[in-house]
Image 1: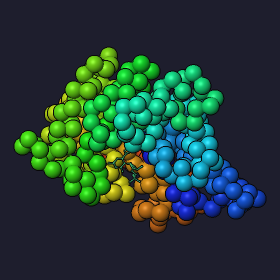
Image 2 (image 1 turned 45 degrees about the vertical axis):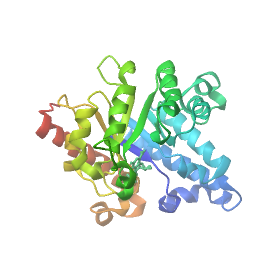
Image 3 (image 1 turned 180 degrees about the vertical axis):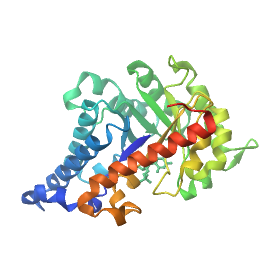
Length: 300
Ligand SMILES: O=C(O)c1cc(=O)[nH]c(=O)n1[C@@H]1O[C@H](COP(=O)(O)O)[C@@H](O)[C@H]1O
């Protein structure tokens, strides 16, 4: 399980905003410090239950330099708590530019200039639209610095099929991208047989997952769509390999703002947002574990 750290400022409880009210409206420092405090409290709540967080950089870029500061401080705190951090940055560009992106987010900048490297994470998401040469810098950097990559293969949004399902050479485009992703990942297999090159596979298109699992047996699937986008535990059963591994299931809004959702909305008010978030994480973990027990004979 992954908890996505996507700060929708309007949904952050007032009890946190009040701590920084003296800063209000002076600059983005107010929003940035509220976001960081919220993230720190969320990380403390979820760290006993999950191992991975995924900040979506867009929600930090909204607040300029201060937002980037909040992104960097969030990453630092998550790593201090022993969590793996996936930077959801969806980068992609021509080879020379891709090399700069790779260095900034998972490469030399993050290891040799840690104090000045706001973007350093353990893995990032990338967009394969520009083709193999645009992705090789990411794979080479990931191999050199022992980092992870998640290639967008079948995204969870309603219009993903507009391009990703186009038929080329008798296959859907996302199937071809899945085949390439498997090939790109062949020379970065870890000791448990999984590759440093993973795939983003949306749970909202569960009918496509079994086929993708077969095409990419060594890729870890980053699976968004659970919760707020409508996917549920039954949609993710086919994400896992027979060994019960191979997928990490993301939820952002349905965890962070669980106080807004049933059954917690009725049980808790916004002032008890922490209880709601904690229970939402425990419930999602249990749902995933039950799926694994049912489908893969998973033992505790
Ligand atoms: O790369 C991603 O993480 C991603 C890929 C995708 O196909 N769909 C998708 O929702 N995401 C991200 O996953 C998160 C989903 O958030 P919730 O819908 O709130 O759980 C957001 O940060 C999205 O940007």
